[in-house]
Structure formats: C-alpha cells, structure tokens
Picture (cartoon, rainbow over the protein chains, first blue to last red):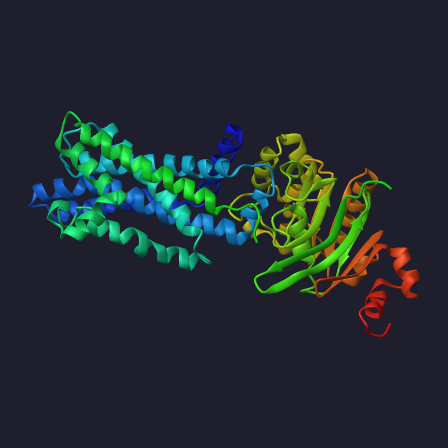
Length: 245
Length: 237
C-alpha cells in the first residue's frame, strides 16, 4: 500500500463528485428531508420517533454508500479506467482505500448534517454523545461501501448493480430490528438477523440513543460492523483482478 | 541479436470459447514504430491487452523488454492507451492527467508537457465528457505518454481524428521512436500501416506476417501493405 496513491485516489473521487452538484445535493438533503417526514408522521408520538430516528441515521449512509460505490465501481469496470489503473503500479488496496476514504468523508458529512437536523430541528432525543452517532454512521458507510464494491463484481452493467440493492440491503433492513425486535423474530430469522451486520449497526444506534454512558455492547457492535466491513473489503479486493482469463 | 521489445513464441489466448490468438510467434524490435494491422476481430486488441499484462495468455511464452509478461516491474515501463478512451468523464482534462501523473510519481511540469504534446492546452479545464471524440482520444493518449515509458502500446490512437491532427500525432510517434522508445500501434486502417517501420499483420487470430515493412512488400511483390495483406490472406492483389 502507498499512502500517496490512496490520497490521490481519494482526491480524484472527491473531485469527480464535486462536479456533480445534483448528487451532492441529494446525498446531503434527502436524509434530512426524510427525517423531517418521519418527525412529522410521529408528531403525536415522540417515543416512536425516538425509537426509529437513531437507527435511520445509520441506515442512510449504509444504503447511500452501497449504491454510490457499486455504481461507481461498475462505471470504473465498464469504462475501462479500472483496467487502465490496474495496468499501472497502483495497488488494489490503494484504489479501494482511496474510495473508502472519500466515501467515508462524505458519510461523516451526511451523518453530521442529518444528526444535527434530527436533534436540533426535529427534537430527536439522544442520550448518548453525538460522536458515537457519527462513529456508527461512518462504520455503516464503510460497510455499505465494502458490500457495494463486492456486489459490483457480480454485475455486468450499472442497471444490474442497482438491482443488488434490494437483494443485499432490503433483507437486512427487514431483519435488523427496526420493524420487529430481533428477539421476537421466528427462530430461523433470529439466527439470520444475528448473521447480518446491519442488525449490529441498528443495535449500536439504539444504545447511543438510550444511554448517556455507552455500554460495552456498543463497542462490541461497532467491532462486529467493522469486522464485516473489513471482510467485505478483502473479498472486494479479491474481485479486482489485474489479469483476466 | 539485440533483445526484442516484445517476443512471442507459440502464444495463444482463449476468451470464453473463442481462440482470439492462435499459436502466434513474432518479434517486435526496440526503438521502432510497429503497426499491428488487421481487420476488426483479428485479435489486435487481445494482443495489446496481453502485452500490457491484463489479459492472461492460455499457452506459449511472451517476453516484454526481457521480462515475462505480467512481471510487476513492467508496470512502470509500459504506457497504454486502450481502444476506448478510459478516462473519467466527470473530471477535467487536467484533473484526469494529474491523477495518472501522480500514480507515476510525476508533477505539474510533466502534466503541462504531455497536454502540450497532444495539443490539448486549450481544453485543459474542460470536463472530458464535453470533449469531442478526437479530443477524448487525445486525453487518453496524454495519459499513455506520461512517465517516458520504454514501450508505448497504443490501441487505435488515431481513429476519428482529423487528417491534420493525425499527421501531427504520427510526427510525434516517429519523434518518440527516434528518442529510443518503442511504439506498438494497432489500426484496422491499412493506410496507417504505411507510416510504420515494421508491420505485424493479423487475421483471425493468426499472424500473416511480421517484420520490416520493406521486407513485407518485397516478399509479397506488392506496392502497399493493403495489397500485401490481400495477397497473404488469399485474395487478389
């Protein structure tokens, strides 16, 4: 790994996004608007808003980064730039970490704006520290980016890459405890939920919302999410082949 | 005998169920402009991709600058322009070249120099998605020219360019060869072959002829590469 090349890739990705004002606008504004909608829906039920709001702050960057990464990597593959890069001295990890860093920065921005809006604009009650919300959002973003990278290896077009969203993300959304508490799921689904990373991300967000002083489970959840992200990045790196057969 | 820039022995490349290169053997000499000439589907792009190390050979041996193909040491010795532009449409011309320059460890002076070489200084701050096809091809060429690579592998670099610009780029290619660099340039346009010193004629994944253009014309008793190709391919000259 070469730090200069990681930074160059991060700078390149951020430069690309800086030319796409509409994407940036959507990236930062949509979570704020959706949280506002949620606050409005539950304007007579603060308890529900406080229950659903924090997990959503982690889910937004997870979904966004999955989509952005899978499509961006697919574009790199179909546009020939990935092949061109892999013909140079740049390492696979330089590319992947460059992407992870750029999207991580965006995720922090997105989570910061959404968290500030949720807490100060919509009155979301969060007992724990703001940094913990941001830390989970960053882990979720890295997880989303890593899974998106991995998924892009199996797509032949950007259209197919988008179809991986319902296949990989939606089952996690259904089972993560947001709709039905994980403990109340049927046995098989309970086991499945425990094998999926978003379950731990949502639990960590809920813990931040409820506890002023973070319990040990919070750190365990963060470690599990980061573990999944690391494994996904390794699998993603394995899909980047310098030489095709 | 001087070490060849590229030396292939019984090289085969199979993609899926198709044999894109079928037991080909040839030498490409250093410091010359060699044209890889053949119709669409003859195996030119497969050969170029195999030489730069992104396409794995199925059989045979391929040595590039004395090293086995795929050797990591070759990555800084080869400049590559793919058939598609393969640059970022949502970056400006300069930002594209700067990114690749950084990978080669080069600075602003080298970026300015290659942009000037390919005549893109006026488009330096333009998004590449807004450039014409010819300008886009030149951004791609600028990236390939970075780093003074010993071997330049250019896949159809002059397709779609206007005649004046084409002339200028061929002058640049010949200049680079005079400086000792080896250029391998593919084209399906036979008159491009007339500008090359050496020719590798491909058809249906097989080498029809390789070597100096003058030898090819003598051997085939023809006046042009196109006529030689037709004769060797079994048609009339």
